[in-house]
Amino acid sequence: MIVLLIIHMIHIRERKYEIGVLRTIGMKKSSVVLKFLMELFIVSFTSIIIGVGIGALTSVPVANHLLKQEINSNQQSMNQVQDNFGRGGHDLQIKPMNQTIEQVIEIKAVVNFKVLGQVTIIGILLTIIGGISAVVSIAKFSPLEILRERS
Image: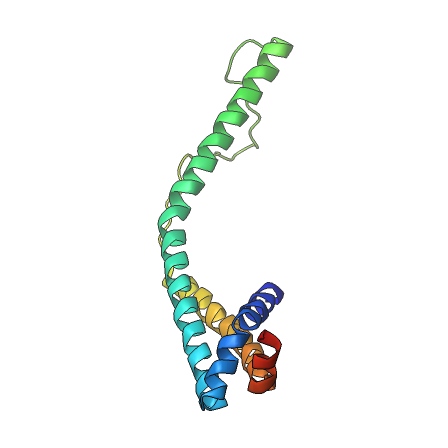
């Protein structure tokens, strides 16, 4: 949240001259604010959709790759312990009594639309809060002072 606020403030500061010009030619503060908020929402919503889509598509393959690496690492570690201590067979495993243990070798997951909706709502709420900071910044600007500072 803090990072988003800082980014919004930097963005508004960089476009301060544009705000001054728009206000000087007669555009109302509310129109300038609405213009910046619409830009902010379009960019944020597009980013959220792209991020959620990429995350949904890549999460399972990445998780399976990490699981495979962990299994290989664990197997190498067990082989090294057995080689170092000379126990002989590879079937030395400690199992709790009366329980069977299944090894997970693949993660099968489905995209949960409830979670995707929650992530989208959180992103929109953060955009609204960041937008409020932008509105406050824009409302403080005096067009003549902005143009005077530029020259």
